[in-house]
Image (cartoon, rainbow, N blue to C red):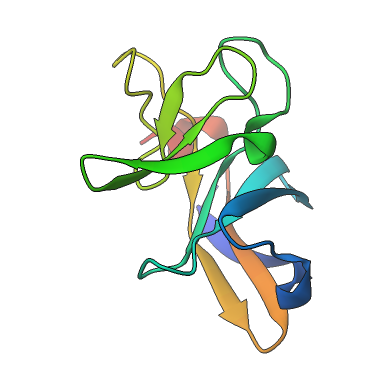
Amino acid sequence: MKVTTQWDVVCKVADLVPDSGVAVWTSSGPVAVFYLPERLPALFAIGHQDPFSGANVLARGITGDIKGEPVVASPLYKQHFSLLSGQCLEDESVRVPVYRVLVDGDQIRVEQRLGSRDELAA
């Protein structure tokens, strides 16, 4: 099966809150979209599920900056996740998915890769 992509419309620009995240639903599950207006790019999207607790809470985390890298701190156990790479800064063996995100008129779109799990892992 060939890997393809699609851009899911997940919310409107008006739904975004500066310096925080919103939880959205995509064709592959929950995603956290963050709007950091003081940065370029200003939009980031990562998996919404906290890998340490299994709860869908990352959109509710506190955004910040560690050594110039935009991060979100999980609201449960406070681990920091890079909004650029999804890497957990406290545990290098853990990361969350990262998605491309864009503004299309008044809509926010998140890219979804479609295909088999084996092809997506490659």
